[in-house]
Image 1 (spheres, rainbow, N blue to C red):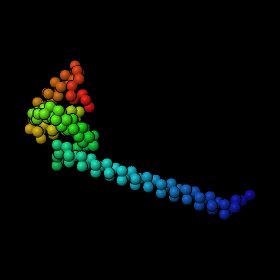
Image 2: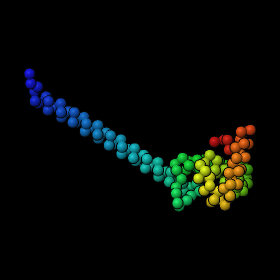
Image 3: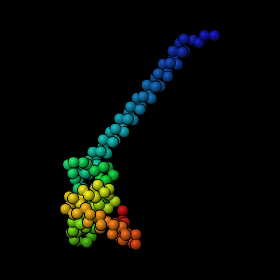
Image 4: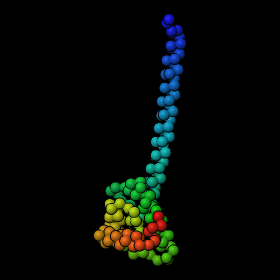
Length: 139
């Protein structure tokens, strides 16, 4: 027995229509995600302009930008709480907490602190942190 050609045509039409709707939904979702990511990237670019360490050569990664912003806020709080300006080494130490070696070296260079000296103070801080709580563990 042969199938009715009009029913075969309507099955093809409905499956084509379903695929078209699915494709349209996916395109709209992709557009929303792209716009969301553009907004996030713009916000991170604005944040990069506000943190104390900027470079023309290479921008900080998203995670490094967030970590540096966290450290900067904590350093500002520390300065306000203690009512004193830290030395460049102390400030570099505060800003470089949890940062990559590349960013730590950048911080040291921009604050005119020898990177080896900063690395040494970080090692001492790490040993001190293992023995008890201090400012840098509050993150």
